[in-house]
Structure formats: structure tokens, C-alpha cells
Image 1 (cartoon, rainbow, N blue to C red):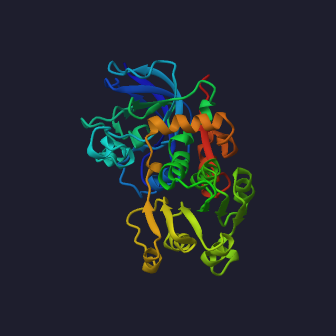
Image 2 (tube, helix red, strand yellow):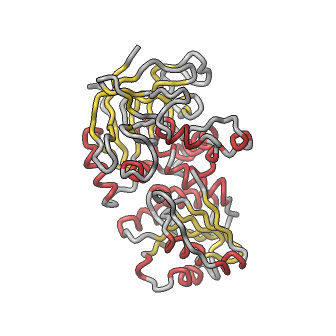
Image 3 (tube, one colour):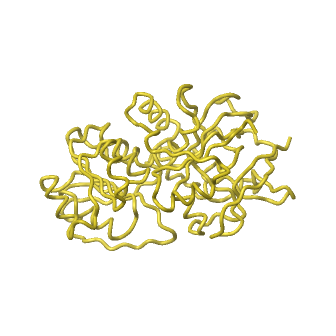
Length: 372
């Protein structure tokens, strides 16, 4: 049976996404059909729309979706129709890295999340003429009212979590929080500096408070982000332009250097500042995605002093385990997702993207009116 959905389709790189009717063919045995209630807009979606990620077009982006299961394939056993779910990235869950629990570094990550097609070459979407529309973007392509995902990357939510707001758990918030809680694992009483206060950085600040860090400092040039960061746990928030030598200033504030740094911008200048802010030994995690190759130069003496620079994708988490943990922290009031979110009706797609590009919102979430 073919279903019809409304999706934001990218026809050419660098052009606006436009709502279109798309067709969804029969599910495969391991797939689930999810009616999307809300989907976050992530910086990676903007990068892909501009041509910075090799996803073939036409395509549907969106990878922070949450909704309700409306159909399941014959081999699906963990999910049922009516289950509220949040969608994470896809992984094969059987390669060497997946077997070691490193799902974000799945050997087949690119094919499953950027390839635009199923393993058999078919697409999960077609336009109304029957032509292929590439989907499977991070295993979901959730800028659409209906989404085909798999049992591997659809994660059941607690019944009392607001489904329309939960999508950002699946990528940006898991990336920031997972980096702190699963990669850096700061000891209680330690210090951390977070560079870039978008959704990823804000999640890192919330996670640092959960971990018991005594000193939490945020760095961002956008003054509209500063008060929110303080509310979420930062003891101090700085604008980098206010200090000639930001690394030295941060070392003073932390009594000789921070134990940890999270860098969610991805530029050479910010990576160097993050390393410079650390004590020796200290660890900097770099998370920011830049299009194509992104060569950076660092000071080797920072590394010789015991500092570590490590890259992290998707928080290095298992979505099946970590996303329910974040949902529980949200329910307890310790990870207030709703404080970051501004919702836009899906028909206001252009307004939402403009607000993201202008830095007016921390996390824009597109919502769907399923009564129409």
C-alpha cells in the first residue's frame, strides 16, 4: 500500500526546501512508519542543504524527528503501533565497531545515514510522478509528516514525555550531553568550558551540571544565549571578543586551566582557544561539523603538556540506551529540553530556517498539524 506524506524537498543544493506531496511505498520487514509530531532543525541539515554533505538530490532532510508508530514491518518485535518514539542515527549494529558498542562509528555509517537509499538501492520516498526522492537521511528524513525508520534507530519514549518537543534528543542534545557524560566523564567538582552555545553546547552545560562539575563556563559571541546558559548551569558566560587572549583568561578563571573543554564550532581559532583553556592534563572534545575537509593547526606543546584533543560524533552513544536516559532526566527536571525549543508550524518552514540562520533560536522545532 502506498501512503502520501507532506515533506520539505531539497531539489538542488543551495535552494530553499519546498513542501511537496511524496509517496511512501511498502515497508521492508525491519522498518517502521512513524507519523512525525515534531522535528528539530540541526546545523547539519543546513550544511547538507548547502551541498556540504554528499547526499544525492532530490532529497528530504531532517534528522531530529519524534512521533508515533503507525505501522510496523513483519520482523519488528520491539515496537508496536501507537508507541511514541524519538529517532536517532542509524547503525548496522553488527560490524566490529557496533559490536564494541561504538555505534556512532559504524563501518556502514555513511551508507546508512548519507546514502539516500536502502541497501537494495530503492528509496523510501517518491514524488507524485513516481520518481525517486532520496531519504534515509540519518535513517529517517524527518522533514516529513510520515517517516520510514528502522527498529534499529527508533527508540520508544516514556508516555509522559512531550513527543512534539522530543526530536532534538536524537541528535544535537545527545551529541552535547553524550560527549560530557559518556566521553569526558568529568569527576564531581571538576571544571569545564563549553565553546558555542547552540543546542549542542547548551546540552553539554546541562550535562556538566548533572555530572557535578563545580566550574562551568560558556563561551559564545551571541549575547542572547548568555542568560539561558546561566539558567541551565553555567556559572559564567563570556563573549570571545571581550578578551585579547581568551585561553589565558579562562585559565585564570579556572585556577590554572579547565579539566575539560567542549568545542561545538569546528573552526581552527575556536579549537585552539579550547586547547589553550585547559590544564595539563586536560581533554578537549571537538564536535563542530564543517563542510568538506577542515584542516586545523594546533600547538604541539599543548599536547606535550598532557592535553588531549578528541573528535566525537553523535556523543559516541547508543541511542537505544542513551535517549531514554535523557528522557528520564527531562522528566526529573534536570535536562529541560523545553527551555531550548521554539516551535514553528511546518508551513512556516522558511521562518524557522531564517530564525536558525540568524541565531534567534537555540533549537527550532517544526510541528505538524495532523488534524488536517
